[in-house]
Length: 129
Image (cartoon, rainbow, N blue to C red; front, side):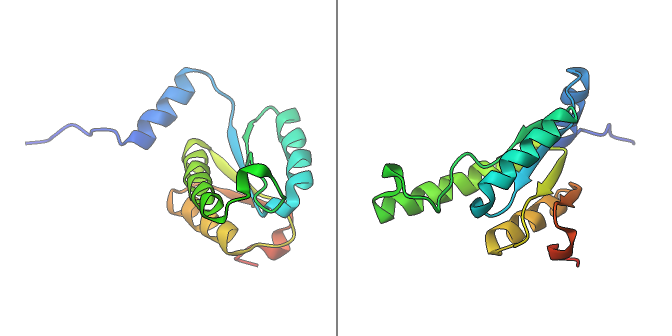
């Protein structure tokens, strides 16, 4: 007896994006020290017709939301979870900057574990370089 293939959530999402006629979605990853470069990459990707999602908070710059160390650590954990959700939503990843730290390296590994293509603005710093 043969059983029908039940689509995984990822397949359902891909099908829904096709049915909606959505353009390709790219998520920008990288150290928040490159926020200016991320804004430039956002502009280039948007000009190319892609939907862009990227980090919305710079955890390295002073801000009242991060004044309490305990709350700041909890916020960072929530932002990490949110960024992994952005990676799941995206069709591909663009890593910005000429430095890749532990968090970005983990995001790259996560994206690749999901089968997402990963591009680099500076390919010479990629984990495979």
